[in-house]
Length: 119
Length: 106
Image (cartoon, rainbow over all chains, first blue to last red; front, side):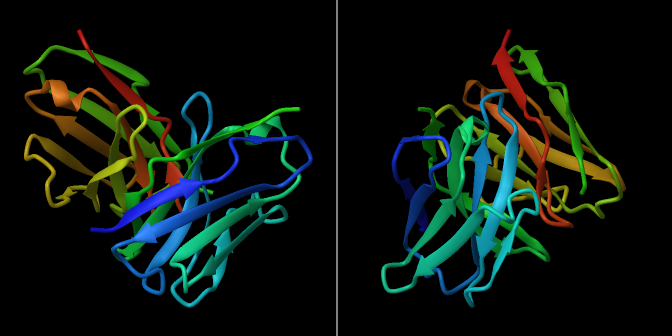
């Protein structure tokens, strides 16, 4: 059974970078897509981006200039970096597996990491 | 961008009731809608994909339907374990979520 677990700082200062790690067990990240979704206070959810089995990436156009998703296949982990954060980036961040359901859909998620942007 | 309008934002039900949540897409999404359940502090759980295909382990009291722009999700015979928030997701063109519906006990 695949399991995903987010980790990283819970507090980030404005203008700095937010960095999170997703550790995956029970499934190789060299298959399928792996991505990040966030849930804002008030419950709006937003897809942020993904990294594919081959290492290619795709990002939400609203974030394209600030976001980077990378991976370490030797550790079966993938990473989120979001630059120049503001208080608007305060959210719970989830990592998820995207499986091919013609097209891809998220079928397994981590429990989420709460991140507050504040000075 | 495809927008998903989900309603109602909250729902109050008694045990044994049938409840229905709707999602309207801003354009035809060709049945590529999924439904998730989320309990506080927990990971979202995929219940249904492609409008009406139940995931393994999803109880049969959950169902989905619709086509074109308009979709619905129902729970017949609500049980206490169903108290949660529910979200729709279109996945035909990138991914967009509905605003969520919080199901509470009356």
